[in-house]
Image (cartoon, rainbow, N blue to C red):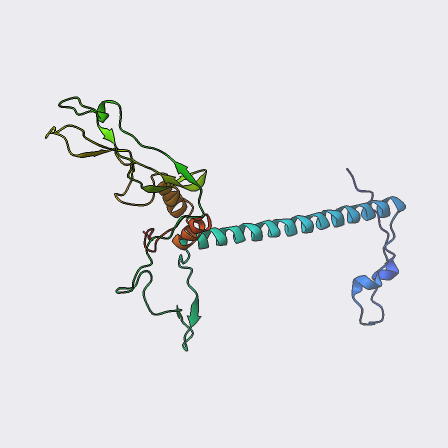
Length: 240
């Protein structure tokens, strides 16, 4: 579209006059038509609005970049940062040192506290008994006579909520004098991942997931179990 901008400059305005210290363009007068004035005013308002929109967009992009950089720094710290949660104190040279010079964990020669009681946890009774063929002697076929007191044992398990499984194992003694069978026959114990461990199989997936997948420190894991009333002896779960 052809511009309607027109201007008229008088010849007297182009002749050198008295030097007043102002620029040459400040001494010249431009005459515009009404249509040219409206067109220039509209263009000025249009580009001023475009400039203000670009400033707002730039500010929004800078805020988004800062938020993403903060997220990256947080994830990098979680992945590659220091895993120890011990407090540190600076030395005289300004370098941080451990709060205590002694090593972590159980100290050599110090007495242990043993296993803590599980009185605050609900107890689920699970009677384990022999099968019907196992209640008889496999040689002579004579039935065993059950003892009055079963062999009691406990096993800590996780099933929606941590609880203690009480596992009385029924015991029998033979009636006859068959030399091929022992005097007392006991139902088999519950399966355990580690022999003689107080923790059931359902506990260890929670330990492995919290430690290796979710990156939760061992100290927090032990605190979580103790908060639920599950006793964790020192050194039971170690950093690996």
